[in-house]
Image 1: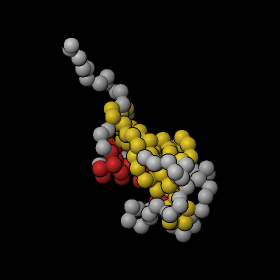
Image 2: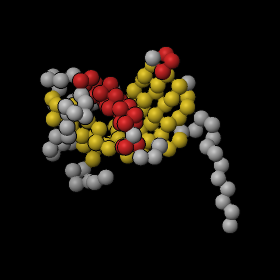
Image 3: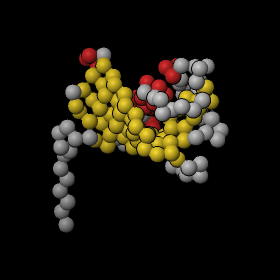
Image 4: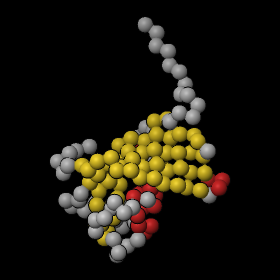
Length: 133
């Protein structure tokens, strides 16, 4: 039996292996959470969200690079009004005990030569407290 593998189609999204251990991808996810998700009107709770785990990641060549993530997020111990979303980091905002959690699709479109970054965030669903990943 012969299995033929083809290279990915040009411009098609490419799966990223182990994005949770890649600091560049974690930085992009933090940027999307801070730059978009924590500023959305739908995030009307008293706490800022922080990323918990990247569930899937893809990168795609467009007019620049587009990174597409499915991310588990949760409420942090950082309250809105006490800290701006742009100030949140892994070091100063941790997941709050008993935090509400959700899965979001986040995208980061980058054109470094134009100093351009655009974030989008779309809620997929709320995550039950007993659900594990």
